[in-house]
Picture (cartoon, rainbow, N blue to C red):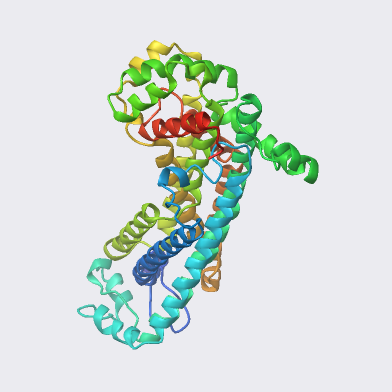
Length: 481
């Protein structure tokens, strides 16, 4: 009998531990007067509020861009036509060896900070209206909180059988919306700090291109002038990172002579396969004299055009972010998945993406050592020729980095996350720091070179053809664009 009593006591303790483990897995908050009982309930409402805030960011970003376009048009001399997209995309002085990408980086940072301020003010104004007071009635229709949640779990009921706890007052919605509206500010700030290393590496690549191909104009504030004025400490550190990146992710166009020879040999047959108006126009401009083509200017324009997309937050970025929050809300509702668990999976995806980009850039850097005819047969009518592959890669990387930074800021900027889930938050923060370091050391030095390689055959697309025409026309006109 004593052994039976002991066994029953052990079984009771085991059931109690099982319930506690289930409680921890589904995110029970053990103290404080909260409207939510489980973490996934808080994350579910948070996802919907972030969808609303993301829509505001998309709206205000579009408005700021439109205002900037109007101001640029007003700044033109009277009677001058507005600049076309092709004139704006390659930069203020296309093809020049300068640090103009730093201006694009700073402009993108300032525009997004203004967008964050406008979005925060909009959220604040909405919170001052009676609208949040109506949200509890709209959201709680048919979803009444069950006070015997843990009792149902102990009886064997599944989480799907238990109703979700939602905010009960408008003030709770107001507090949550105000807290969440500030997270994008820190996420964007951290993102642009990390991307500043990519802007610096792009300046290094354009400087190397201009030094190899002397038909590219130089500005008074070229890399040599700045190195003398400010010293070589940062450039030395970036050069070390570039060497490490080259070992892991390939050398790209490090051998400029080989790249130029490849371009001259491959472009005639590449154009011959194309039956487009742009291809015929370019063929008429060059007249098979590819040795005289301003390759340096063209490659620098490609680096500037594609790298600039990493500093632009248009609808191509905000739409995936909104869809991602919709997916998160779906997981919170149907699978009772907590935010920390989903961000852990997203961090794993980010590391896999970094590795994939590294493998891809290393694989394309070896094309210069292969036969032209074999490469043409292998890549004929491939999707590289129809879409801007490098921009898709950069935008995917931008989305991954920004959302990872958002996840980190969401955790470190909320004190209750540290109080209740210190270990998990600490490890995810360390993972984000490692991811940022991996980007700075391995990916940032490779991105500009990747953009330059993807502008060469067999990866030439219609956008590259348009930039070739633009570079050749301005060379013939003798202008700096």
